[in-house]
Length: 162
Image 1 (spheres, helix red, strand yellow):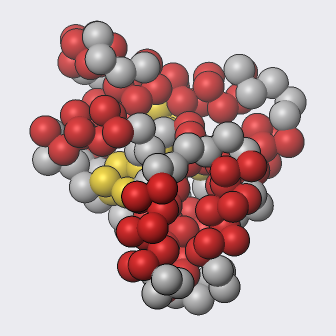
Image 2: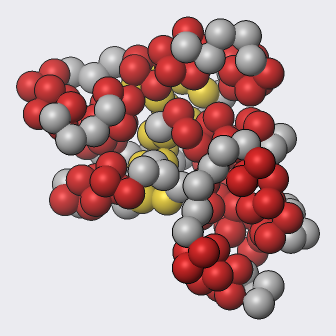
């Protein structure tokens, strides 16, 4: 079974567009560090997306051990992103789910294999789980998800929708 560690943004945005199930379908289980748990559930209060994430029994919380590395990463990243990287290193994650550009750059320095919300949706398009990546991107933007015009064009081209 693959080990996959996720940051909160992927969970929240996929939940908001009713595509959270894709993570279970593709990865079976998602592991999140405590900081991501707090971002999703405690700060998420009782928002609809937070409730949906909380109901997903296939999302497990794990505690990081290397707090020194986490503190070092906090200088450039938020707590959730830092703990995702540390936990991914500690458990030897097969995939690390991150959307933030700086966090992805840091994760690459540690040799982590990364994907994000758009990568999950692109995979869903390839596996015929969704009909239109463009429609999903429109829904994502309505949730506050930011994507550059260049990246949107590139990913839609890769999906065969341009």
